[in-house]
Structures are given as C-alpha cells and as structure tokens.
Length: 213
Length: 213
Image 1 (cartoon, each protein chain N blue to C red):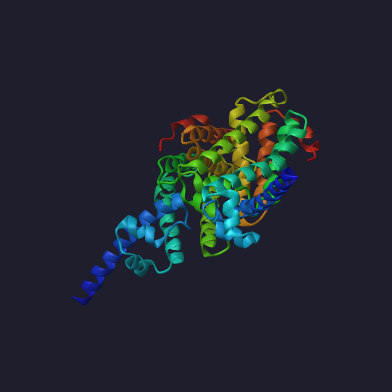
Image 2 (cartoon, rainbow over the protein chains, first blue to last red):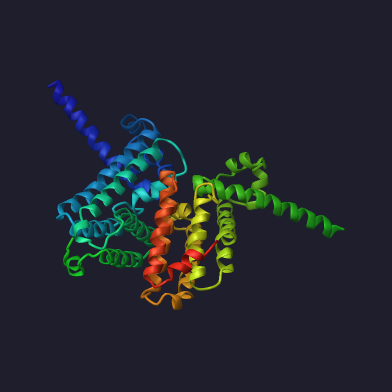
C-alpha cells in the first residue's frame, strides 16, 4: 500500500516533469537556454515556481534536463527512423531527408534546438557547453558511421569524414536559412546539394530517387 | 568658437560611442544581443549607465547600433580585402579564405557575430531580427555576385546560386565547429571542401594555390 502511494507520486512527478520539459525545450529553442527562467516556465505550464524547483533543482539542473529531453526527442525523430532504413546509401539518404523534415517540421518551435543552443553556449565554458559538445560529438560520429556503412556503394568517395562534414554543413545551412528568411527555399537547395555530393561519390541516382521516408 | 566647442563635444561623443560599441559587439558575440545590458556595458567600459543611455537611448537602440558596428567591422575585415582582389576566381577564393581568417582570428571574441546573433534572433520577430535578415541578404547577394563574376573561369558550373549556398554553408560550419570543439580542424575541412567545389566547377587548381591573401 505504501509502495503504491510512492509509485503513484513518482508517476505523477514523472508526468509533470515530462510536461514541463516539453515546454522547456520549445521555449529554449526560441529564447535560448539562458532565457529559460523558472518564472516563465511556471507561467506557461501553470505549475508553481516551488513545484518546478522541487522537480528540477537549480536553473542549471533545469537547463541540463532540457538538453537531455531535446536529445531524446531528436533520437525519436531523426536517429530511430534512420536506423530503421537498411544500412548503406539508403540509410545515409534517409538520414539527410529525415533531418530536413525534422527541421522543416519545426519539431522544436525555434528550429533545431541544438543549433540554437550551441550558438548561444559555444563561447561560454561550463556544464551546459560540455553537454552540448558531447551531443554534437555523438551526432558527428553517427553521421560518420552512416557514411562509413555506405562506402561500398560510394566507389568514388575519397574522404568519408569530409563528406560527413559537408552533409552536416548543408543541413545546418538549411535550418538557419529557413529560420532567418522564413521560407523553404534553403531546404530545397540543401537537398539538391546533398544529392549531388552523394552522386559525385558514386551513389546510384535511381536508388536515391526510389527512397521513400 | 561656439562651433569649435560643439565640434569638440561631438568628436568626444563619437569617440565614446565607438569605444562602447567595440565592447558591445564583443560582448554580444559571446552573451548574445539579449545579454547586452546597459549595466554590464557600463561596468566593462567604465562609462556611467546614464552616459550610455544618453549616447544610445534604449536597449533596442543599443542593440541596433551594435549590429551596425559589427557590420562595419565585417566590411573592413572581409568585404574590402575581397574587393581588392581581381574579380573572377581569384576574388571568389580570396573571399572564402578571408572569411575563414576572419572567423579563425576571432575578429569578435565569440566567433562570427552574425551567426551568433542570427541563431538568437531568428525566431523572434522585431527590429533586431529585421536588421539581421537585411545584413544576411546583403551577404548572400555579395557571395552570389562574387560567384557570378567568376563564371567565365568556372566552365563546369551549372548553378551559381547553389555554389554560393554551399560555400556559405561550409564557412558557417567551420565557424560553428571550431567554436564548439575549440580547435582549427573544421577550418581545414571547410577549406578542402570549398577548394574541391571550385575545382569541380572548373577552376584551375594551380591558380587557386597561387592566390595569397
């Protein structure tokens, strides 16, 4: 009976936490992690300030929990659908197009959470920056791994690390340009550019065009 | 005599303004335009808060003046040296390498001012965002013009707008990556990638390697 009460409390606590973090990632994608105040979150979610402090502790803890919540959403929206595609060029192209949809569909209100957060924190040493660097490293390693698993189908590829760098550069440029100019044009440019990178590396254009995501 | 006094006052006002704006662009490149408080600027420059208000008016006016000061510095560091190079592939490659040096040399303490500011403001409608969008449009038009003036020396170039988009994407990726990872590796990757974009478009590799900036 005591266990049931505690489990019930924990469950309600987890639900409140999830609901607040969902608002927190969207707020932070627009106003930055520094703009993530316990007061604003309380207003927006209807929770009390003391309730938020009880759930998250300090502002820094809230920022770190928000980064982890954004990471989980990114895994669900981008990484998992990519991993469901067969490895090789199919998975690599699925990755590129799934990322474009993730950004274009405004998974986070302010576009890619990590790009906004990194631009804010990259010059400020501390645990927030460390968490974002670790996630960026994970992301680069994931893209490089997808490129590496496609190498057999990319006979003209000379530098896999460079291809990963170029693909990420184009994805970010699309995200940034579309947010700043308020249109989808840069997504189209990025998709054309990435497609021609893969074809230059030896990918079969018919295979690329046959991939549905 | 009255004119001399007024001129003297104006000159001193202009000098104070310039000194404060120089700190403001560096502060904003690290802490963002929202983090640009009149209080912090007063502390940093030794000016009084009321003095700063007298020179700039509201925080919004200060933010807009800071953006214009950053634009002028960018013109001096990137656009003018580029325009001194002979038009064509030489100028285009000078542009790419001058931009890399501008970012690598931390003209602004927090890397490219405009990338940091745009990531902060892109989801928030208002005069700050409008000013940044206008400058970004100017920048894209400048890069496109440099590409267009090189077309005769780029016989395999099919889509000049796409090349401009790719070059800007690679420059930004280098700036972002180096700030986040604290090393120069991404500048090297971006330079290799841009060079191969130009060579794929038909640029003479020997010409590229002969260009000194």
